[in-house]
Every structure is written in structure tokens, then in C-alpha cells.
Length: 396
Image (tube, rainbow, N blue to C red; front, top):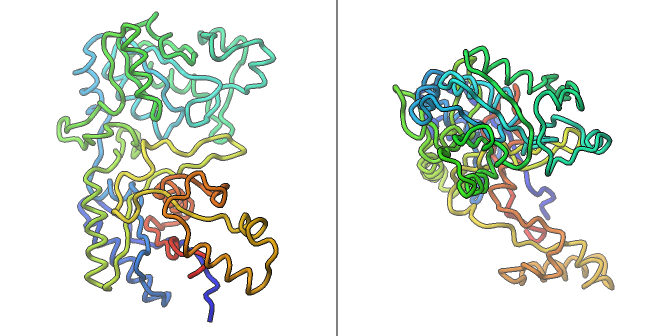
């Protein structure tokens, strides 16, 4: 009988992960227990994904505000610090900002507008048009912003981030100044010592600032790249990808993830004889059309994955074949023709008409987005996702 189900994504419940837990054992035992209870089988090329949050929690990869402050002070001493393009997020930046302010005497924040790089807005683009503001050239002080825009509260959180960030800085006994611009070099009129807080544009920002004469340039990825007073750390991403844990601690992006995914793959093979792929995932790479927020605040969707998840899809657009190559066929003849075409498709379909409209993105970005949507960010309790049938096609 022909199989009628394609890709299936299952959120798998797991115990609450604590520091010191064996994350590989938790993932494998949870997936196998779910398979027994729900009576499904593990197959070759299934994908087992685990969220970065529980990997980092098991590692105990945390840092305190004081530890952040110490690293900041070691790099900037008593210099005025310019913070470039921080994300507008209580979860992603507020606790970090507290640590940065605790290690500094004065901070000048340069905010991009009308939104940060992931779509959290400080103004409506139509309002900028009405006020005659050109966000590509105009530099706004806080006073000018208030005069022209007023108080803009985030539609989801209700927070005015200019007010919020200023309060955090001043509560640490640090002087605060806020400007708005989209040219990072605008900060150099205020200080030549900068901390680049942008995520995906950070390399370009550093290049522009270096060429423009900045004297001290670090990025969030350069903070806590090694332990400070026993803190967690991430040698590659530093503070990038952190999340608020408590009012005075952050959970860092996990480290040593390749060993985690390789061990999950190996242990599943030992238990079932099946070769699955495994990955650690964080934020998905997708955009909310209502709030205009691009989800990807992590530096990457997946910090580690097994080799079977390399590359991007190489797929045929079925509707293109049905409407063009085989428009004269129907029923079983159409099905056979399309199946034969898929079975004999080229190994590289880039630029071919038959692949137009497919999604030319990395497999890990696509699968990580699927997993992020499956597990959610709230109280579902499914930090593990089992994806089955992802590599199947119409012929299987």
C-alpha cells in the first residue's frame, strides 16, 4: 500500500534539565521512551534535534552580571564605551547591559532605527516619512527622537526600550547617552572605544569602524570567550546567543556541541541499529509578518550537526512538472512520469527551471526553523524534536 504521510515533526517531552545532567543520555532515552509509548519506529535518516538552551543548561554555561562587568572593565578600563546596534530585548540584552554598565563609567548607545536588526521597532516607517526623517542619513539625539516620535512601546512587550535601557545603565551608577543612527561611524563623535552588539552585521560594523579610526573595537563575541572568575564562556560566540536566566545571570550559547550530536547519533545506532542525524538548534530563521520581527537573534540556527545535514535541498517543483513538462498527462501516467523525473534528476539543480520556487537554504536553517516552531519558546516542555521523513520525496 502506498504511504500517505510525508514529513512528521514530533516534540518530545523530557525531564527538566539541570546542570551536570548527561544531555546525550537524556535525549536518547527520551526519544526511545516516546517511540515505545507512541508505537513508532526510529528509521535511518531520521533527525533528532535538541534545543541549545538545555545543552547549555546541562553544561552549566552561565555567567553573572559581575563576571560580565569584570571582562568589560578589563577591555575598556575607564574609557567611555559606545554600544553599537544592540538588539531591543529584555531577554537578549537587558542583563548583559547591566553587566556592561557595571563595568563602565559612561555608555553611549547607538540604536538603529526604525528597528533593530531583527525587526524590533523604535518607530513606524510611515511616521518617519511624515516627519521628513531619512533613517539612512539622519542622526537623532534622544531629545530630537522624543520631540518627533514621542514614546514608542513595543507592540508585544509594551516596553519603551530607550527608556528601559537608560534606566538599566543609570541604575548601575553609569552615565547614559542615547543616539539613533544607521551609520555605525556616528558613534565616533562621542567615543572611539566601541563594543559592537549587532549579531549578523558585526563583521561589517567592525570593518567600518576600524577604517574610520576607532581605537578600541570589540564585539559581544569577544566578551567571555574564556572563564572569568569561574564563569561559563563560549570561545566562538562569547555573549552572542545569550538568554536571560535570572535578573543577575545569563545563559550563554552552548559550547562543545559537535561532541553532543555525534554522541547522540552513535548511541541511537547502538540502541536501534539505525543511523540518524542529530543537531543542536536555537532560533529559527523566519520572520513574523505582523510584528515584522525576524526570529534569528542567535548567531546561527545550529551550532553543531552531523554530516548528513550538510548542504541544501536539491528538489524538483512538482507543480512546475505538472503544468509544463507533463501537462498532457494525468492519473497514473502523470504520477509515473513525475516519479521517473525525480528518480533521474541531476545532482545539482541550481539554475534549472524545474527547481524554481524551491527553498535554496541550508538544511540546518530549514530544519532548525521547523524544530523551533515545533518546540516553541514557552511551556510545551518539548526541548527535543524528532523529525521523520524529511528526506523522503514523492517517489518513496
